[in-house]
Amino acid sequence: MIFPPDLSLDSLNQMGKNTMTDFLDIRFTQIGEDFLEATMPVTDKTKQPLGLLHGGANVVLAETLGSVAATLTVDTSRQHCVGLEINANHLKSVRDGLVRGVTKPIHLGKKTQVWEIKIYNSHDELTCISRITMAIIDKK
View (tube, rainbow, N blue to C red):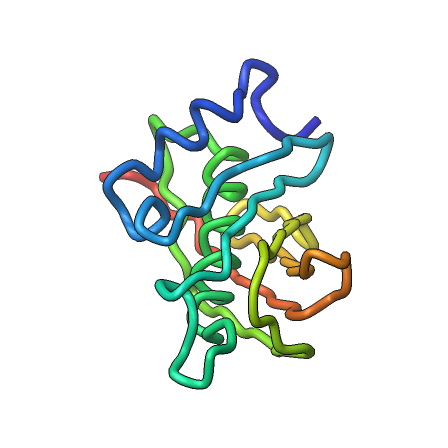
């Protein structure tokens, strides 16, 4: 397992209290050997004017998953993880329901990490794929 053995969903969900994650109702739902999963409801808060899930909301879900996952793999008493780059391909529109994001590492290096995030609709169809590059920096 790449994450701490005592990690709980409750602790992950508490990390986002009073942040954008909380505002958009993003909730961590599963911790795996090498992945994290979270959901986000498709509501007026996450839609764009045409009534579709906003691409930026997809990116918030993706960045939340990738950033949290990266942070969980380093010694936070000595290091921070910060985003260097994120991209997203929006493959299928979503009008309602719940989207589910799953992140897995592509590269876990000493100075950088790359995470892939796949986002699915309520019918388990892939709607967005994203990749985030994280920098691992030493605390000063």
